[in-house]
Image (cartoon, rainbow over all chains, first blue to last red; front, top):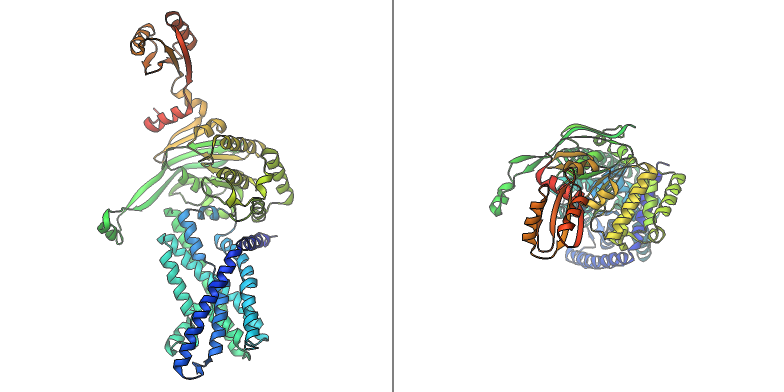
Length: 267
Length: 333
């Protein structure tokens, strides 16, 4: 009974997402354009390197990684920062705060609908196409299970980061700059635009200590690893779990404190 | 009956940055700590019973919305106490949400892209309304308004009137104890306004829901509220029956007559004939302000008819609107 009030939001989100048929086409077109750029960019990088393997990855490895990162991005990006910022500016947030569900949960569950639709309509088709075109470059084994587990945690970490940044909008009342900054930082440091393997050693060590790599690097590494070592898998998932819990607590706490400040000072 | 909303001398202060003008001023503001305290609500107390419809009035920026936000739990009062259905709203916002419904004039809580019925279904699950209660409410709605054509229409395709109507229905759906309506008839045409007033009235009657209504439309007030509360600049000006309010300004009525000849001169003559009344004239009418405690309008008219040939006449009650306007401008003596 209790879960019903969350699943109803998922359902609503799915219906809502499916209303806008054109947006799926636009996303698909946008992705193709982006991937064409990526293809030629990396082709020239590999050509100028003069070797088949750069930083331990072949051209095909890199391309598969980036295609899947794009597909993952489509399904994980929730535009939470936008949504929070816009609600604050328009004052709609008052109505959302007056729902008998905690705002953080309310917003999350409102997005789950688009997760489901995007997963089936963009991620899965991309995955199948890539798997078919590359003739088994993506290993299909136990790694898929690790990947699913990893994505669930990635979604949670990503949402917490977004929510944390969104909360800042309560103070700044502007969203554009903050949102762009967040997007650039997350996409770069999570390994969504450039695989972390290409990062200089020092920088990579630092990045591995940050929460961002749990969003894209972790699930994609697990997915593309055909012969997973128990130690590496446990370490990756463990790190994700740590960030999952830490970021959830942090974003919750920050929201609670901020909201208190707002209810005291007015918005 | 016990009070559903109990407010004891609440005050709400905001800290506002003193903004300076011009580019240089704006740059300085970036580093400014120069705040001033604005008192939006100043020592307001009231007690509202279950089932009342209270008109909450005041000019723009009087502090109405701030008070409502405190009652809903979105804002915390700087000082004073609020109890809504036995709870302190800002400490139990989520629980309090179950007991209240809100309609904020121009904003909608409905799912924009979905047909209305989907919004209702979502709200049913969110508020955990039982099937029986939901069906009962829908039955009531069907009996009050022609809801069928609306149910399957996406909210974004609705007219403002239809959307407002839908928003009100959505706010009442979980049968809350209190519904806050913030300017529900803003921007609507006359017939839609009437429809919405009838609906609010019926829902209040049927479910004994307490309604707090803020509006600038005196038609809403006259049609719905027996009690009104007026605030201005955060201070309470008036809290009593609407009848009492009119009595406040004496029982004056204005008799307007149209006669031949020079109105200005005639008005002066009439003033001599009727020393108890105040007579004035404009291009078309001679207005006689009658204090009903001193003279009866009908007697005044009778007297006038003997001396003048009256071609046309009008009788004007003092309207709530005129009274409120007077209060905004002058305050209550």
